Length: 197
Image: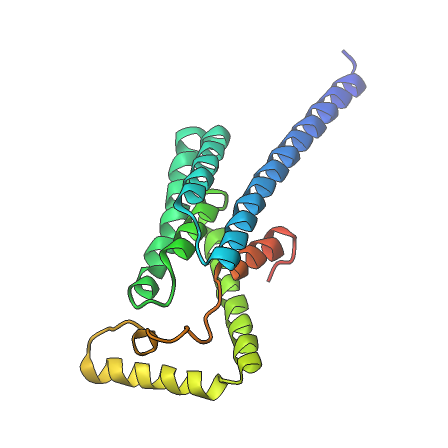
């Protein structure tokens, strides 16, 4: 077989592999966005991210990881899931984040590498801070919230014990609260949409 034909077949084979890989990645991103979008809608409408939906998302993410990388892919996905759980557990313990938010980020980790998970988590917190500031500006309670935050930090340092962050606001509607699923969805849309920081 002449070299030109061999090179043409090799080029066609490589192009086919690239298209197959791109289509698989697109499918992965589409499934991830669907999982995050539905969770965000239920969080915004009903103030809840349903465990059944989290389980469906985890099953889809882990299945994709096994399909792509076998046992190694599964281990990588489980490690990516564990990272947000470990990092965010202290915030959950003081009431700063809900369990559903953490589980949702862990599910997103199934579809991402550890580096991508940490990066998207950082972007999520940045976007969450921006949304919180906008909400406080709209509610005109920025100074009140900052005063409560400072009081909370001083109280923790004085007592040497952690307590629930919103403990003193139990009987009122939580002010300044945002649904963290929205910043998570936006962060992954920004990152996977090709805007890298």
